[in-house]
Amino acid sequence: MDLMYASTRDANVKVTASQAILKGLSDDGGLFVPERIPALDVSLRELAGMSYQETAYAVMKLFFTDFTKEELQGCIRAAYDAKFDTPKIAPLVSADGAYYLELFHGATIAFKDMALSILPHLLTTSAKKNHVKNEIVILTATSGDTGKAALAGFADVPGTKIIVFYPKHGVSPIQEKQMVTQKGDNTHVVGIHGNFDQAQTGVKQMFADKELEQELAGHGYQFSSANSINIGRLVPQIVYYVYAYAGLLAKGEIQDGESINVTVPTGNFGNILAAYYAKNMGLPIAKLICASNENKVLYDFFKTGAYDKNREFMLTSSPSMDILISSNLERLIYRITGNDAQKNAAFMKRLSENGVYEITGDMKERLSDFYGNYASEQETAETIKGLYEKTGYVLDTHTAVAASVYRKYREQTKDETKTVIASTASPFKFTRSVMNAIDPSYDAKGDFELADELSRIAKVAVPQAIEEIRSAKVLHQTECEVGQMPEVVKSFLGM
Ligand SMILES: *Cc1c(COP(=O)(O)O)cnc(C)c1O
Image (cartoon, rainbow, N blue to C red; front, side, top):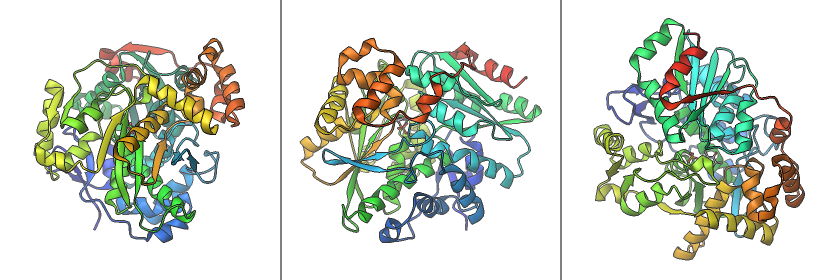
């Protein structure tokens, strides 16, 4: 029996994994969720002896049950190869009493590569399995990192086009340069005059637009999503938590079965939800520590049970977390309603109409696995400087938010459980903020000069992803207003 996927907003929807991957989002606006979370069917000991690719198969086969072994292993092989600069794929680094799980060794040096290097393969395999004849158009809203990772993943993949929308003034200079220099005839990049939430809402509206869907079909196209709302992105992210645990066990850092904590710098709630799914599969995880920047809507939610996006949107030095509508939280809300699509849909309706909803006391009790806190800009900068001066290890701004929050957690709770911190980007992706945190006088230097200086002080080579854009030509210059997004899409598709 295949594991089926339901919509978080309509109990009647049931699709296979490959159908859920193809569609991205359910027609009712809900997210696809597995009907149950499968349990790991190999022991932790066995996992401790596995490569990243073997771990990926052991986890993903339990979720993507309508893929054959050959299909799934083919996707895994094509994804986790020499695009990563280490055969470990996701190495663990121990520094100052925590384990940093480095998820930035892929092509675009942010953790989005972990899932977006496999998603194109999962998607094209799903299209074949379901006899899809249309060309697939990937629409993506990005706060900076998803965009480049999706572009790199889908560039020149036959049968696909990709269109990325980013907030023109809301990403780092390196992030923007990475996107607008993207090669590939099937790639399009657009800077919108608005913030990430507006980009994401615009994309979701296009997905829900039935007229647009028919018009597209008339031209031989259909939409899909590379955002973390796609289950084909979420499941590959479970893998590295299992792999990290197994790695600690293999090194003798923990006992078989010993619980660990996980700290995740959070924006759209995809990465931490993957850790929660890993826990629900039976991985011994105690606390899930959810770290926010000054856009601390999740911190307030865990504290009060009220999700309230009606607040000022802050631009911070961790732009990939500058988000007020954390889309993947819907999957958690659905779960703590007891998988009640109707109840969940009512909360989401309140969110879109009033910008706020409040969960019940019963639901709040089911959130005891989570701890939320946030770090200010100053705390984030101090964490980067402090850890560098103490150990020589340099964190990016997002990971520094997580490290700050982890320190607060430890001070408040005195919990000394061993903790893995998801390290979501290379410091070379946010060089200016990182270097300014270490010494404000660096601000006078140019971006690439700073990269060379970072390489010198951190004793880490400048990553290939940065070398590539030093002299690369700008190939994408489209900008638009939020309301023009559908027209821009149509013009790219010649409609
Ligand atoms: C996307 C991103 C995050 C946030 O991850 P979510 O899954 O959206 O919560 C954190 N850090 C970096 C560097 C990112 O690119």
